[in-house]
Every structure is written in structure tokens, then in C-alpha cells.
Amino acid sequence: MSAEDRQPPPEPASYEAASARIEEIVRRLDSGEAGLRETLDLVAEGRRLVEWCAGELEAVGRGLEELRLEELVARLEGGGGSERAPSGE
Image (cartoon, rainbow, N blue to C red; front, side, top):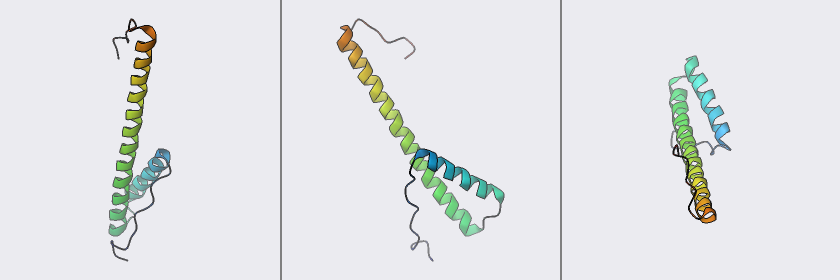
């Protein structure tokens, strides 16, 4: 089977599932038992999963920023703008 014939694994079901798979990949690579082809395949899969996880974390970060903005708008609208956010934010 050539590299062109191989289908990439499906997208992970969750961040946690992707993290667990990354850990499995690292253990397999650390074992030294993987051959050259398997090593290349595992590295490619690991890279794809890491990129997917990074995208998930970025999306969560954007969601948190939106929540903070909504909270700030609610405070400003409800408090007439007299309340200030703590200086640490």
C-alpha cells in the first residue's frame, strides 16, 4: 500500500481522546520497537493530532475571551459604567 492509498485517521472525538492517542504514540516511539515506516506514520499522525489539539485550545481561548467581553458589556450596561474591572485583568 502506497502513501497515496492510505487514508488519514478520522478526526478525534474529543481533545481528551486526541491527547490519549498522542501519549500512545509517544510511548510507542519511545519503546524503540517501531520500524522506519511505522515511525514515519506515527510522527505524521502525532503532528496532525497536535495541530488539531492546538486548534481546539485556540477555539476555547476565543470562547473565554467572548465570555469575558459579554460579562464586561453586561456590567457596563447594568452598572451605568461606574464599576471597574479589577486592575489584574
